[in-house]
Amino acid sequence: MLLVFTFAGYAQQIEPTFTKVDDKVKVTYYHDNGKVKTEGYFKNKKLTGQWVTYDTNGKRLQLANYDEGKKVGTWFIYTDKGIREINYVDNKLVSVHFIKQEYKLAVND
Image 1 (tube, rainbow, N blue to C red):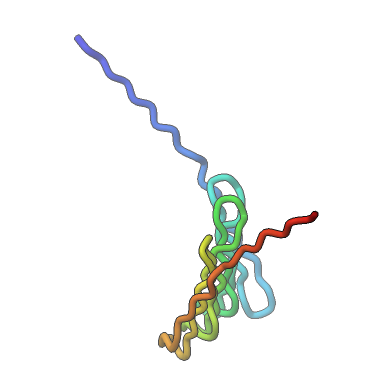
Image 2 (image 1 turned 135 degrees about the vertical axis):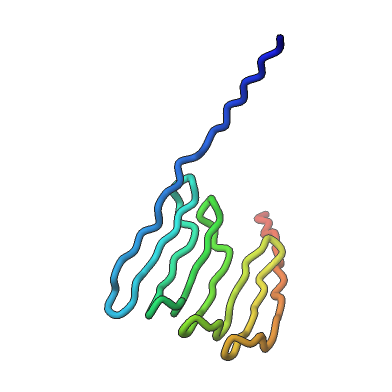
């Protein structure tokens, strides 16, 4: 007779926090390691203002803007290769630009 036992480890999920700020609600979502995953605001149950997303180490991944739930303004998506700049007007994609990350090595003699 062969008995197989499996144990699944589940990380404790951290509940988001909600804070009333004037006529908006600031929400913060967390990664399982406790670091901030996403921060932003709701107004009338719609995304509004600036939203920032981070990786599990706290490095910024995305900067986004909303107005009454619609994508607006300039968004930035950060990668190891550079920054993608995306422009929205009234929830419509207008342009996408890629800013290549260039590294220069400084050598002291």
